[in-house]
Length: 257
Image (tube, rainbow, N blue to C red; front, side):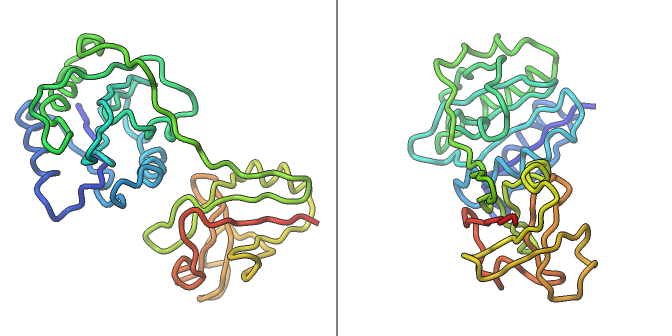
C-alpha cells in the first residue's frame, strides 16, 4: 500500500489542495492520500512542524510526506527531498525540517525544478519526486545534495535550580495550551518537591497535576502531561487560551520548593 500525506497552510476553501491531489492521483492512481492538516496558520512554520512532527511517525515506512507550509512566499526556499527512518519528506529548505528532526538528515537532495512553478511551489516537481520514490528509485537521481540545510532556533525550556521557564508552543482545537516542558524534565527537576505552575505572569497558579480532564470539576483549571509527554494547561470543558489569554510563545513558569 502506497501512502502520501499532505500538511499545508493552504486551507480548505481554495483549489490548491484539490489540484495537488489530482496530479498525484494521475501519476499514481492507487495511492492513498491522507490529509494531516491544511489549517496551519499562514506561514506558521513552528505550528506546522509541531503538528506534523507528532503525526508522521504513526504512518508506515515508505510513506511520502509532502509539506506545504510557507510555500507561497515571495522568496521561496529550494525544494528538498529527504529520506529518513524509512520515510520520505518533500518540502521547503526553510528550517521546517530542523524543527521536526533532532539531527540534520543525512540523505537529502535539492529537487531539480520543472520550471512551471505556481507561486513558487513547483507541483509538477513534487509529484514527479513522489512517484519516483514510491516506485523504489534512488532519491539522488532527482537532484543534487543541498549546499546548506537551513535550521531554525528551537525554543527550549530555561532551567534553574528551583525554576523551569517554558513556552507555549501550540494551542489546540479546544484551546488547550501545550508547552515545550517534557515530563522527564519536570520529574528530573522536581525531585519530589512541591511545585507551582504559573501562567500569565503568575495570574493563574496550579499546584496539582492530573491525568485526565474529568478528574476535576467542569470549568476548573488543570495541568497534565498529554499523550506527547508535554505539559498542557487546560480548563475542563472550557477554553484555556481564550479564558486565560494564553497564546503561542507565552511563558509558563514552574517554581519548586
